[in-house]
Length: 487
Image (cartoon, rainbow, N blue to C red; front, side):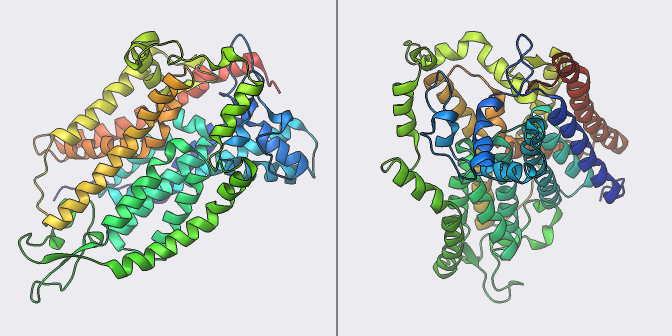
C-alpha cells in the first residue's frame, strides 16, 4: 500500500474557494460591459444578453422574443428565444437591488454576482464529486483545480451569460450519476439528478448531452445481477460498487456466477418520481413557448423568421451559405488552434490572449493525462455485469465531452464563424476526469519514486494556479484598467 502525504482538508478547501472568489470577483468588477474598441476587453455578447435580465428588472416580467427593445440590431432577433432561467434569476435579483439603488453599474454587478454564486456552487459540487471519484487526496485536488481554475472556465462565471448555469448543471448531473452508481437511488441522488436536468434544460442547449446520457444511464442502471445463495451476498448490482475498483477489491465477484435481470418495478417508480420533478421544473417554459410561438416549443423557427424580417442579410452570411465544405472551414483561420486556445484562456471578445507558451504547456499537460489514461492498464478484475455498466458509464462520459465539439463545428459552419472554445466548456468535467485519472495511473507506476509522484502533482496544481493568476492579473487586468469601466 502506497503512503500518501495528507494535508488538512479544511484549509485546502478554504484556499480553493477563496482563490475562486477573489479571482472571479476581480474579473467581474474590472471588465468592461459594452463594446470597447480597439481593445475589445468586454465579455463576449454580454451587452446583448444583458438586455434580458435588465428587461425583467425594469418590468418584472419575462420578455417574449417579439419585444422590440431587446431585439439585436443586425440579427433581427433577441436572446429571449433561448432558454432564460439564469436571466430570470439575475433579473429578479437586480430588481431587488434596484430598491436600494438606481445605479446601472450596481445592477450590472448584481447580475454578474449571480454567476459568481453559480460558479461557487459548482466548485463545491466538483469538490464533492472529486471525493467520490478519486481515492487519493492529491488527485482530488488536481481534479478540482483543473476544472475550476482553467482560466476560461473561471471567466465564464464572471459576466452575464447562461453558460455558468450550464456548467453548474453538468456538475450536478455528474455527481448524481456517481451517487447512483455507488449508493443507488436515494433522496440525495434524485434531487441532484432532477435539479441538474432542470437547470440544464433551461439554460444552454450545448449541454443537452448530459440530459440524453442521464436517460440512457438511468435505463441501464436497473439491469442487475442476482447472486446465488452462499456467494457472500444474495444480490449486488453495479450501482453498489465504486468506480475506482482497485481500491475496493473486497467487492469483486465471480463473473461466471449469477444471472441478469431487469428491475422494471423500481425503474417505473424511480422514473416516475424523477420525470415528475423534471416536468414540473421545465414544463412551464416549453408550454409557454408553444402558445407564444404557434407550436414552436423550442422557438428556433420563430427566431429564424424574425431574422429574415428584421435582420441584416450580411449578418446571416455563413460558410455553408458561401458553398464551403466543413473540411474547408476547419482548414481556414487555424480553426482548431483558435478553438483550443480560447478553450484554455481567451478573454474579452476573443481579444485578450496569453503568451503562446501557456497554451502549449496546457496542451502537453492535457495530452499526457489523456494518453496515460487510455494507454496504461491497471489490470483490475470485475464481474461482467458490473464491467458492462462501467463501460457504458464511460461511453456516456466520452459522449458528453465530445458532443460540444461536434455542435461547435456544426454551428460555426451553419450559423456563424466563431471558433470559440467557450462552447466546449460543457464537456469540461468528463474531459478533466480522464486527464486526472490518467495522472492517477502514472502515480500508480511502481518504477517511479514516490517522492517524484508527490512533487509532480503539487507542481501540476501550482502550474494550474499560476496560469490562472498570470492570465487574470498580468494579461487581462492591464487591458481592463486601460479601457476603464465602460457601461
